[in-house]
Structures are given as C-alpha cells and as structure tokens.
Amino acid sequence: MGSSAFPSWWGSFQIPEGSCGRWEIGPFFMWIQRNAEDWTVMRQRHKDPFRDHWDVEIPADPPCPVSGKDEAPASPADWAGKVPHDEVGASPPDPPQRYAALEGSGTVHITPAHADRPVVITPEQSFFLPPKRTVHLFVSLPLWLQFRDEPDGVPMIDDALFRPSDTWHGPNTQVGQVCYASRTRAAFAPIGRLPHRIVTPFEVRNRSEKDVKVERIKLPTPHLSVLVDEQGGLWTEAVIFEQPPGVDPPDVRIEPGTTNGSQKLEVLSGPRTRMEKKFVWHAFGDFFGNGW
Image (tube, rainbow, N blue to C red):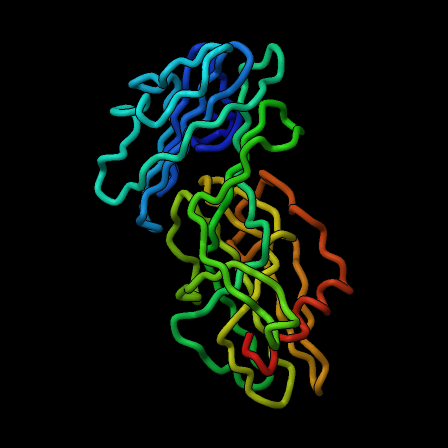
C-alpha cells in the first residue's frame, strides 16, 4: 500500500528481493521485480483510454519470472500467463527492461506527473464567449507515471499512462511547437474521474469588445503541479486565460489552488519546469486568429 491516507496507486512501496509488485492504472499495466542488484520492469497497455480501474498488488500473484544477476532479462514468453495479454483490447506486453538498483533499497517510489509537453485540447463543440464575460471550465488531462528507487532521484521510468497523439500548434509549419492532442467535452462543472487522468480547472475571461471563439486551448501542462484532495482526486492549479481590451495578446497565468471548493489540497509532485512571464507571452500569443 502507498503512503497516502487513502488507497492510491502512488506512494512508497516495499518490494523485498525476489518479489514483484503489480500496478494496474486504467489502461496501463506495470510489473516491478526486485532482483539481487537490479529492478526488472514490464509494461503493457490496454487500447481503451477510458478503462476505469486501478489496483496495486504486492507481492503479485502470479509472481513475476525471476532473473538472476547473471541472467538475461526475462522475455515476453517467460511472462506468458502472468500478464493479461489475452484480455480483449490489451496490446502485447513490452519487452522487460532492467535498471541498476540502489544498494540496499527495496523501496519503490511511484509518482503521478504531468505530460512533458503542452496539451492542446479541442472541445467537442467550439463556442463563443461574448464581450465582458467569464466562463469556468474543467478538462481531464492524461497523466504520466514516474518510478524511482530513491525519493529525489532521477526517474527510471517516466511514461504516459495512456499516450495521447501528437499535434502541431502554431500559426504555420515553421513557427510553433509539437504538443499532445486531447479531444474533450470541456465541462462547465467538475467532471467524473479516471485513475489515469487529472482535472484542470480553467477560466476564460473576455475583457475585449468582441466575441472570442474558443476552439483550441493549449494548456501549459509541464508548468502545472499534481495536487490531491481529501478523497484522493487529482487536480492541477487553476489556469487563467484573459483577453484584454484592444489588440494585446491574451494573458495566461497559473493561480494557486483550484476551483474544486474548500477541500484541502496536498502537492504530490511539482511542475516539470517553472513558468516565466516572457515564456507565457511567446507560448500563448498565437491563440487568437488560430482559435484557442
């Protein structure tokens, strides 16, 4: 079990030498085995991005194949019957990988993290925001998982629980940035949760004298933290998009806390990179004219 006050798939877990742990997080499966001098990691994915289930089992049953320190990593054939590769919708497992272990450590630290690139969300239906209006929205974003064997170490694994497709965001093919794409309902009220996704609340404030069409929104996901509420729900800080009067580009900022009510929030992981204002202007100046 993890270190949180409520059951969760993240936290610190003890895996004795010769034992194996199993993580099932939505469409993502992972097995971690502690060998004498290394960790063996096997991953597998389900094709359903909305698979709503999570479980952590230590020791895993059935156990993982054992690899001695002088043996080659276990092959996918060695894992036959030990991974749900016959489940409808499951992809074949990835080849096992081995990582040198910290001497004397039997602890794994599993942390949720944000995407390593911005995520461009496209509402299922675009809408217009009239002048002098503000709208509050909620979107669900994909999470990454990080695995370490020391609390502040460099992640051995930094992988998407369900990898979104790539997209290009910019005014043309020469100027812009490779991002991830996510089609969403962009709800006007807090939305249901999945174990492999996180909720981002954001506001669009139109202080200009003309309508703003909201059709593509690039969220600064590498600059957001992962927060958890008292029920184990995952949130980010609130993101504010504000269109000032005139022709100035929109102002984008991250505000502490969220609009999830008065619940106490705990930081599980900080942002991958800190946001600077000059970066914000560069990153978000192309929203208008190309849709948000």
